[in-house]
Structure formats: structure tokens, C-alpha cells
Length: 92
Image (tube, rainbow, N blue to C red; front, side, top):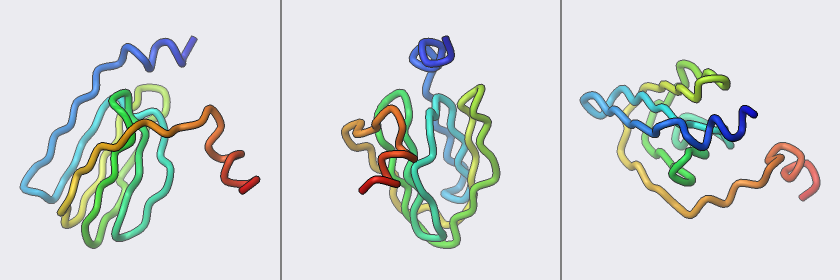
């Protein structure tokens, strides 16, 4: 039921002064550090690159995500998400 709901959740991206990024329609956070954040959204895989990146919050139920830092690159890629990304990483 939650999966079908997330498919219809709109994907919005708001970037303020290249310092604060707010997103909706985020399905999962793959990985993050101070230089890169990789998210899976309704519109595909989103890679965010920059410096001093910090995740402020991620609400799994609503798909809302926020972060701050010196954001340099926002790049969408084909959606490569598996149903269980955590388990897939364990068995590599």
C-alpha cells in the first residue's frame, strides 16, 4: 500500500542559494557523506555533489528530504533501485 502511494507522490525539488535543498517524492537514501548524497526518487536516481553536505532530515512516510551544504551538482540517472537496497549491498 505504501509503495503504490509513493509512486503517485509528486517529486518537487527546491534549491535555495545553492545552500539548502528540499525534496519531495524521495523513496530511499542510498548513501551520503560530506561530498555526495545518492537518493532514489519517483523520477529516478538523484546524485547530489558538493562540499560540506549535511542531511537535515528524511521522512520515510511522506518522502520529504532536506539537506544543506555547498551544492555544486544535481544529476539524475536511470533508476537502478532494487526492492531491498540494504540487503543487496550486504551480499555484494
